[in-house]
Length: 175
Image 1 (spheres, rainbow, N blue to C red):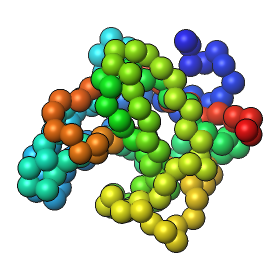
Image 2: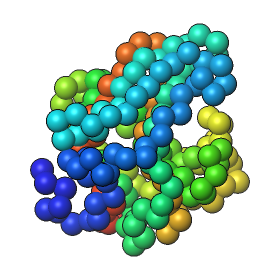
Image 3: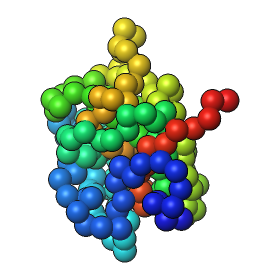
């Protein structure tokens, strides 16, 4: 599916190299873990891949876009086109530019080797800080989204691979 053909705003389209520039890997090595992740372009898609290690109290790998206004105002969900490995991932959003700021997360499942579109409503994003849920944090405000990304923290050691075609912001009808 062409990300430009349906209603919504393209946040990132990885068919061009310019949308992959500046993405940053943050793995559990920031706290002594041994997991490794990478983010690169391959055949017109972004590939977030690596290996999760549970040693040294580790167990996560993530990638995030550089901070900039993400054009999601007026929308109520992200729509992502991904191809996974059967593992569970989280799509993330940040509303503050600091490196170590709260992170809003929305989990999604993947089917091995199958392209799928996941609709992630803003109201279902969970505010967290260093993996802990923030009870008093406000809900995700689309007007303040500065950065998006992907996280794997499913407590399973081993290789992972997630291909990302595009990320859009959309307005879904209320259920």
